[in-house]
Amino acid sequence: MKTIIETFYNAFNDCDSNTMISCYHEDIVFEDPAFGVLKGERAKAMWQMLCENQKGKHFIVELFNVKSDGKIGSAHWEAFYTFSKTGRKVHNKIDASFIFKDGLIIKHTDEFSLHKWAKQAIGIKGIFFGGMRFFKNKLQSQTNLLLDKYITKKEPSV
Image (tube, rainbow, N blue to C red; front, side, top):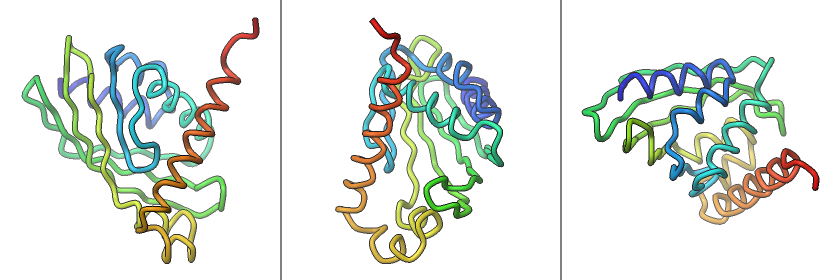
């Protein structure tokens, strides 16, 4: 299962969402501080949206300490990018944990300091508000609204 984690993050570095989501079980549950809990197709669509937004830009993913016993796994990864809303440089350090089923990732949890991320991505407002609950709730509301718009846009017209 170590290989599937490495495949997932190598694909993310290449902004290859198709390979990334092929590592996910159909019943995937993803969670992180920015989006909250996403299940199934929403989790997959999030990676598609993120890859589309970063493609062709200065975006780097570095992967460290990949571990797995076949049932669970973990890794540390770091992302380097420019936050599009502010143009500020971000170096986010993330600890990921995984649960596997049928040879695929069924649960993926990313943990990082939202306060540290907000300081880098947003600046002064992030310094003051990035560690507060209302900030996290507002961010998750905004990211999920963007995801809803992305999903609606990619759905074929009837």
